Amino acid sequence: MSANPDPTPRRKFAAVRSIISIAVLAVAAPFIATFFFSDKPQEPPQLNWPPGAATKPDLTKAEITTAKNVQQEARALALTMLQETSDTATETLRLLDDVQTQLNRWQGLSVGLLTSEQGRLLAAHPDFVKAFDSLSRSEEPNADQVRQHRSRVQLLIKPVRDALDDPDSNYRPAPDLLTALRADRTTAKTLLSEIRERIETVEQMLARAKDTAPSTLTLQQAIDKYKEDLALARATAIAEKVAAAERTATEEVAEMKAQERR
Image (cartoon, rainbow, N blue to C red; front, side, top):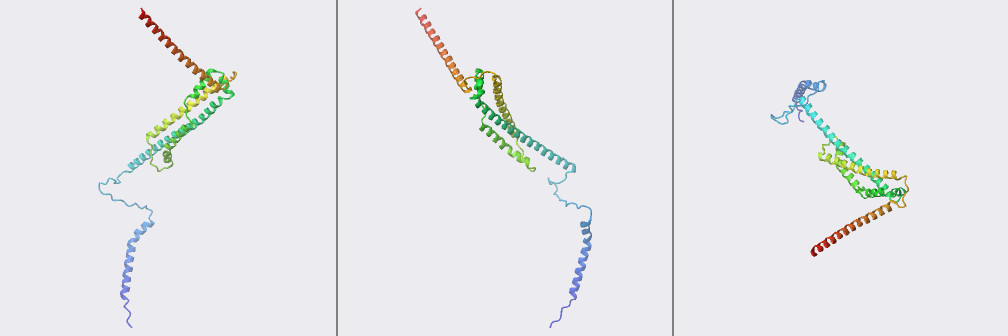
C-alpha cells in the first residue's frame, strides 16, 4: 500500500489564493460601492474622436438648441405645406361633389320641362323657347368627366395624406402639386358657377311665365318648331342673297351688252 501524499502544499496554495482574493476585493470594494450606492449619476463614456474629424462633437449647447429649433421650424413649415395641399384637395373634392349634385339637378329640370305643364308655360314665350334651347345646346360637363376629375385629385393627394398620418414621414410635396390642385379647384368653381347660372336662368323664366296661359305645345314641340322656323328663315335669307346676286349679275351683263351696242 502506497503512502498518502503530503497535504501541506495544497494548504499553502489555498491560503495564498484566499489572500489574493481578499486583496482584490479590498481594492475593488470602493469602486463597487460607488457604482451601486452613490447618488451621483454616472457620466456616459466619452468617445475619442480622431483629430480633425468632421463629426467631432464640439457644438455648444446654444448651437445644439439652435439646430434643433431650425429642424423644428423646417418640420412645422413642411407640415403647413402638407396641410395646405390636403385642404386644397379637400375643397376641390367638395366642389366636385357640388358640381355633380347641381348637374343632376339641371339634367332633371331640363329634361322634365320638355314635356311637363311647366314647360308649356315657357313654350308660350318665343324668347323663353329660344333661351332654353340655347342653354340646352351649350356644352356642359357630364358625370364621367366629373368622376375622372375626382379620381385625379384623389390620386394626387394620397401621398400627402399618407405623410400627414405618419409623423416620421420625410415626404415633401413638389410646389407644382399645390399649383395643380389650385387650378383644379378653380376649374371646379367655374363649372359649379356655370351650372348654377343655368338653373337660376330657367327658374327666373318660370317665375315670369307662371301667370301666363300655357301653350298648346309642349316645350319640346315649341323648340322643334323654333328650329324649323329658324332653318326656314336661314334658307329664305340664303335664297334672297342668291336671287340678289343673280339680279346683279343679270344687270351687269345687260349693261355690258348695252355698252357694246353703242
